[in-house]
Picture: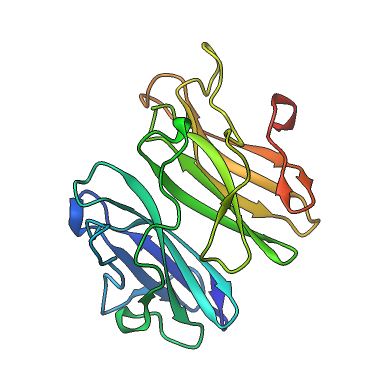
Amino acid sequence: IVLGGKVHLFYASYGNGRKDGICHAVSEDGLRFTRDPSNPVFHPTGGWTSGRAIDPEVFPVGDQLLLYFATRDPEMKIQMLGVAGADLKSDFGRQSWKQLRDAPILKPELPWERLCIEAPSLCRRGDELVMFYAGGYNNDPQQVGGAVSRDGLRWERCGKEPFLRNGQPGEWNFSESGHPGVFTGRDGQTWLFFQGNNDRGATWFLSRAAVGWSGNRPKALTAEDFR
């Protein structure tokens, strides 16, 4: 994210189990980055979480930069989303972040979400925030859901069914359509980028689909939306 003329990169360590955390680096030109000396800058705390954090997504709301992340329960079985915040005028180092909920903001509840909600990606529509998220672990199959919020803390699902489903047997995304990334172009068109495969992760593909809207709610995608 670009703030104050600088590029701030938020990324996660991986492969360290409970010790994985969110890290921060900053750049003047988007090419040469300096790691934050306090890395990792954020780990969640509380009896609901294992302390792990991956899949960072940052989004400015009011005078704060909100940090969304995926974590797991203490048994490391269920993946869910949490949120922290830092003053937009801070340096986003470790001392800047405050966990805003001592509980998940979204956890698996619907049958298709199985044991996992991860990979949040946000955009703004009017006075609401819209989140696209991945439900189900990779190739479970993973599919994409949607949720909306006015304050960035309390979220309501857009429906009980996936916004973007995995494909049918034989289609390129049969094993999953997951890990969404939303992008709104200068012309106002919203695109959803996502990964998919049909061989349980032996190969991977990236695709995009055009997102239509009904007010502030995204319309479920169909094959005609793919470009």
